[in-house]
Image (cartoon, rainbow, N blue to C red):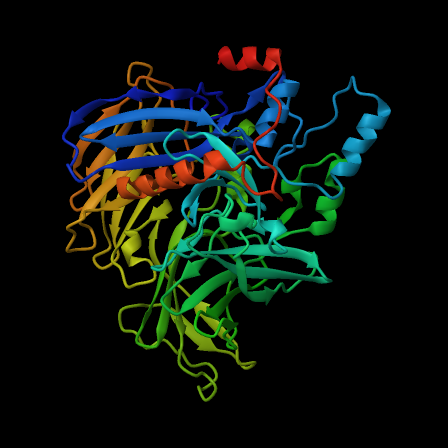
Length: 563
């Protein structure tokens, strides 16, 4: 594992032609962009947690049967400050950056004060998302960085909080057929209240000026808010679900302690230590009606669990089906401290709980007259239950679909609809997947791909333009290798039978990434038009910070050249 985690990876900003073995379908043209931590050591300082590393974007551009690879570090303000100082000076969730011992006492005092009410990092290293016509590197705070999807150049910095009271936001938005981006965020102690906000960004290009010089993101609309059950202990969430008529939010007992976060720097601990799981608390499932934009009155809950990734949700015969990947506790985050990623798992305390794909079924019919203690699930296809309690709430027990899978993806044309197939990474007692799988919900059978010394990334489904069935398409996965003689590659599978169609090998050192997006060629053309018409005429939002930080100092530049 030490060959995969904690490395500093050299970037390759110019395209490198990959060696293609096999034949890529002629219709397959576009770019797969992936995001994840790539640099964990700066000067003599090191990040403590793998998720804290500086964002490294990499892409595979597919055109006319050829594949070109490139990679580039996100030139965030965090990156620039760190490289210029030749040390870590911006704190991340699992790593606090303390003052240089050589600084005077006044500089040190200011540094401590600035962390009491911190401005979070813009090291957007989790995902690539779409807002309007633009593409953005994202993390879980209020900042986004727009990127050029073809060159991976870092463009302007966008701040949600300038347009709504959003302190945290997910890196897993949803997209509807009208081109809107739907997302969720947390508003912490705004006007004396902490709440979860559902917001929508219309299909225009936030991050660049609109006609007339009006500010970007001006059309962001908060269309519903859900009060947090605790003012100073909001629930952490990484994603949410959506069906045709509902948005589903899981308020889980994995919570941020806001007061502890405010004093963490002074107490010498990281912000991650302020995230606590309470196994004795309930997990609440909130339903928001997309038609009325109001929360449903029925209260649904289940036992304590931790969910990072939603798989899908859909409605069937007056029931709402919700599929998620869940854990029994929050040990997964601790597992990714670099000191734990040494490949030795004799210590059972290091091993996180097994991820389970669980199906919850929520009755949508009126429960007012239902008998207390009765199971309200009427679908014969599931063993999940929803039992009415004395106080009128509904206690939900899930059906386990399968275990040991993570990083789920589906054919997004079936998002919010009844579906059959899940594509995911298989995880067995290791933080790194060794297989990617196709899981058939109907038959409960798995197809898998694996190869010795290979560690696959999240599988991305790309539908065939002539698709007639849900699994008509291909799977893309970036494969990291641990054998020096075996270079990394882009794996291309037939999604129907999981057989290899082609692979594009590139002779570089590649990092293990987290999430990403495939952008079809037709959407890249839209980006080119926006780029030509707008970006070169404008430096971005007048109210947002633009990409005008000073160049890194000579020692830091030399450091990058030596990678």
